[in-house]
Image (tube, rainbow, N blue to C red; front, side):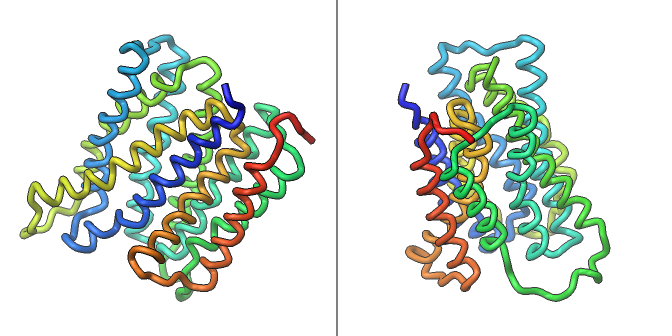
Length: 295
């Protein structure tokens, strides 16, 4: 198999998540659709790529203890992190929360370097560093002080950061013994199991204009999130976590910014333009890094 196949999967994740990021807020702003209901729709859309990948695997799912354990950990950390994020955004400022959680690859890289003994070459190291610098720039928005919000938002943001960073590590670890289709199966199941929690967290307004078209519009956007998640599993299967994590996490907001600029006509601020430049350079360096060169 092509040694760079992981890059193809990572790029598909970048593209789908980039489009998803550009349009995901549209439904919520247009119809007042609660983020927790967006989670419900997303969880349901996970079924579609889940069925496809299991079907391609001849409807086989690994049910050994390790596969169930790792798959469940991956699923609950990812989906649970989303629910914690909703709570954080209720009590804290988005302009501080998102830059914090955007550096979750630090956790993944640290765990993969120490526990999995992953290494990369000089180009890869430079690319990782540039990607890590770019991530907070994509999320940076000027705002006031944070003292008025207390500390709960910060604790929740750190928990989300940790959950998603550890999730990526386990995604790579699980791929050593479990096929990617089975991993995604458990991710789908765990996301569906948390739907009742999301519904309990939802503030249902007395009047609303939600109809089938709103749910379908939301599903059309959220399916991109699900497809991206599936491709990310395969990217971790064939690529190193220390490279896949920063590339995917920097590439997705890069695509969102570009799409917002071209299609939506939304000119990004200077900080995001700098982030775009750094992310592009980082992606090129990571892609050019020879697979067999390690330091």
